[in-house]
Length: 453
Image (tube, rainbow, N blue to C red; front, side, top):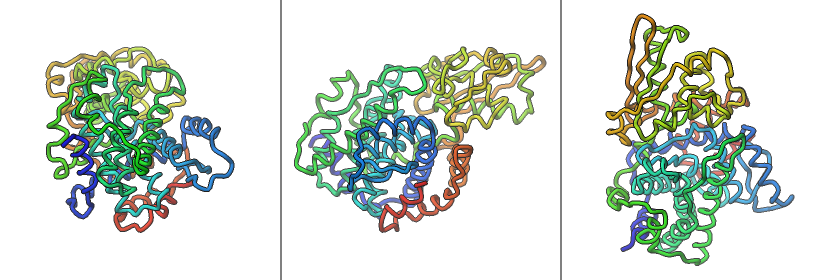
């Protein structure tokens, strides 16, 4: 039996009624969090810029087009899903699995939403599809050692986006195991993990991810019409093409019995997850000891070696992306403008003397101790000095980690804060309640309406 046989069997047999209450609760909360990111992202100028590109290809009348969340126009299914995924992912507030370094929610949930609307799926089918996609992306990401290969130029979410979406669409369409196997094979053949390192206001990073979503949808619809893929691609050629090591046992262990969604992190605000533990450690010290930021002389940030260089940005950020990655800038705004952590657009960076001066006091150290526990923990330790005292605090599991989980009210508050200033959205609580009862929904289209302007 090939690996794709095992995966297609899992997808085909996955049933909501066989899940524990705990797994269902995690699933619903991640749907809420992902849709919040989608909603907030759809209101940004960057999402609108992507929409303008897609509008170029949309005819004035298309009776099969579906609404695009956060906009007032309709697009063909693959484009609608592409734009929705872009909106969710660009916020940098979407969930992340630290074991695989995959950000599944921004890929899986918008795709399921678009396809579910297109075919008139029920809430039960929608949820089963999402869970299957989360499981495939994260298990494959861990099998390919995603938390290490990301620092070698391969983006795990992009590498596995198409196959994750193929799982989602295959489940919603009700494909049989052989069709699912071909859908996954076709998706893998269309996959790439390289997006490059690009700076500037509008980069192609999110567009390339959107194309993976597009490819995943085409893979499943083509498989439903009898198209075939290399059913042994995962056993043989896929890993060798990219020079990746592959751990089969991680992929298959407990498949269908335990679910990765219970371990996936939810971000409390807009940041690279690699910076979060250090930000939380710093915020803890400032608040607990009532430290005046202007009295701080030196800050040492200890993190795992794997991402120490990534977050160490001594210069003032050139763009939005830089502000989200830079630990220097994020600690500075945490000190003086904490609400900026919830600003997903970062159109106006705080180019002030006190910010630049504060950034200059921060140095990043690769900690051998924290390196050893990576990727099980993406941790951070702050050593802070004032003229008369030293402080230190280590965070192994920041807010949103599976060991320090966020609840429904936490996620609702987060969504409210990342949307604030772009639009007064008054349906967040209604959306939350609809998701809590999602498995009883007879038509996803009614649920979809809560996300439209």
